Length: 428
View (cartoon, rainbow, N blue to C red):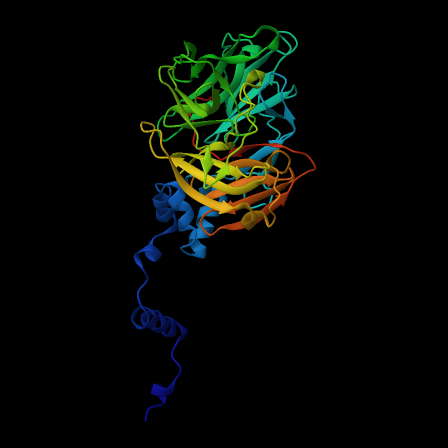
């Protein structure tokens, strides 16, 4: 027996032995666990936004990396929430006016960007928010140098605080039915601004139909005007916050047509392609789909049409609306998707009774309900009830969630997803 053999080993030897046992006694780490944070973030930066959301569920460590402020600018972003606020419609188009508010889809109210917009030119003068598209915002900034009511269109990125003032389109605001922004960084670094131009045809009734489109391209820095290529009169018909959708280089919008009645119309960025196709409507399972949409001079007052809105989700055009009974009460939510534009056929994607969503059956759409958006990456539908309760419906698990309670006002909502990459189309 040796006294030396029983002597405690030095601390360094214990640590070395422990390290050796850790390698041999426990299973080796997975390849993903061996990656450094820098390498992992670089890999995640190349993952589409939808798959990045799923990566948050891998582990708490991955969730922390994705949400870390230092990594957000490198990772693809998805819907963060909505700008909302008081509605103004001085030129006929419903827009937001300062001060802008923001509500996140989680309900915490935190905005990823500032909402004061003090980086814009002449920000001390009125600023209206007209549209949002994939991280860029379209604003109308007023100035006094050209007289009362004079303004310029400004496209900005609030995440980078970069902006550009657009030249005048040459169209008076009374000629423009709506102004929309089109931007898809996956297709092009350039954006487009669309003005749907309307003309007066009915004298004192001031009924207007679409006569053409003016389109601004950030690539050329110029506006072009193209006349419509429809033979029949067509009216821009949307009183919804998401009046237009930019998808695959086309601007989609709700319209009214004497033959198709309630329809979806589209025009491309060059004003060369014009399309119209009917929305899902008519009688479904014995129930009539009705509408609040009315053409000028009440030409469609005797028709029961679809009440709903269009959205871009998961790369396809969606149409959500309600089926009503003969008393005008909404009884069922239905969501359709357009697989391609050639056959113009809508496919039913989802259907659920309104009583299973709201818990009551006497839902009056005109007063109680407002569609807000469908999530661009997943099957979440956002809406407001009573104008002040912001809610979300999950079409996958058929669950409803109250996100937040808003101020006692019926606001307009514009979706926002941060864009942290620099754009050559914008400058200070």
